[in-house]
Length: 195
Image (tube, rainbow, N blue to C red; front, side):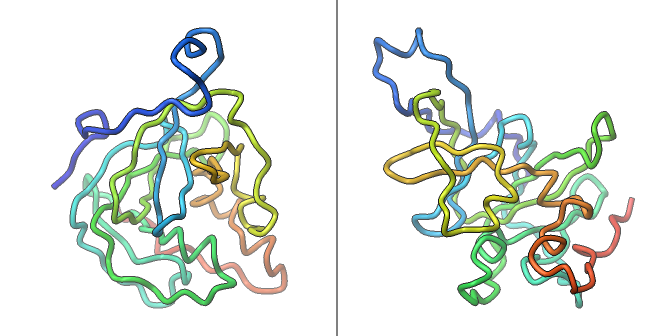
């Protein structure tokens, strides 16, 4: 089943502001994503495009470790990534079962280039939240990969939440292997999308 995000019922929260302060402080929306129990990231709302419930995943031999495989969406094959494996490579996390949802996200490989799509595996629906400027904070030092992927960071319920750049998740010239192990060859995320 495919849903567009504007049709899914999300929880709306205001972070870092009281009701009287809400109108006077600058704020922005974010999609809060719990990618593992107690672990969250955020995406800019304009990058989240749709949601597929119970995606059919095709496993691709030789793909990067943090990919579940490929899914088909609107007659295009998209990579489906496991964010927990990507962000916590140091923890030797085993590939999880196929997630309940595939969040379709948009990105641009180059400025003013065409919009492209990828997918992130989730087991819990994302929430739309409002973030106050006062909630901005530093990125956690313990996750080096977040330093490469994050656009910004904010506090939510005592946790630093990184806002990720979707282009850096899916675009080959932004890919983490360039930074993590420069001597290793870059594997494509998966085979090229079939159109």
